[in-house]
Image 1 (cartoon, rainbow, N blue to C red):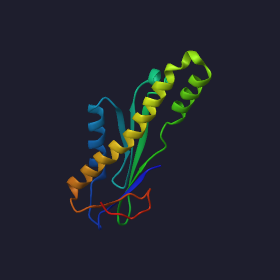
Image 2: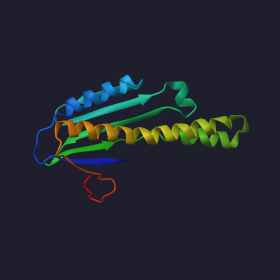
Image 3: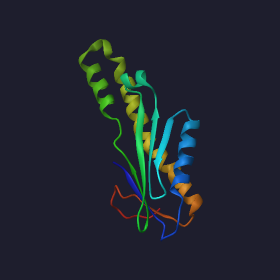
Image 4: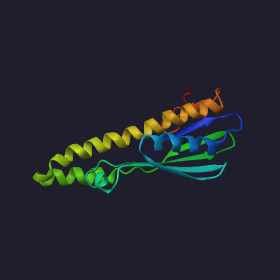
Length: 147
């Protein structure tokens, strides 16, 4: 699970507006996207690919949680769908006729991994639009480094 903290020094930021902008941006790229929540906490879901893509390991889906804290906003990428890619890859190793699925599972894994990074990059930009002086700390690394 990846997480990031946006230190806002008690400045107000509209997380519902950010969630709406993320949903609109990803829908424009062909994703299914939606959010639910309020001004203190929002959950955004992203998904690309239908049942067939899920079966062959190409579907990408994850959730992003934005939660207001006393010092800023905590952003957390939720459990990603890795199981389908592993299952497809394992089946293709043991059943030779399914060998081409190893390629699609690998591509799906790459697509899934990149989606989290893309979402964080877009989120960084949207937070900076509302609050240019924000300090962004990648909490998953525990380094406390400011970017």
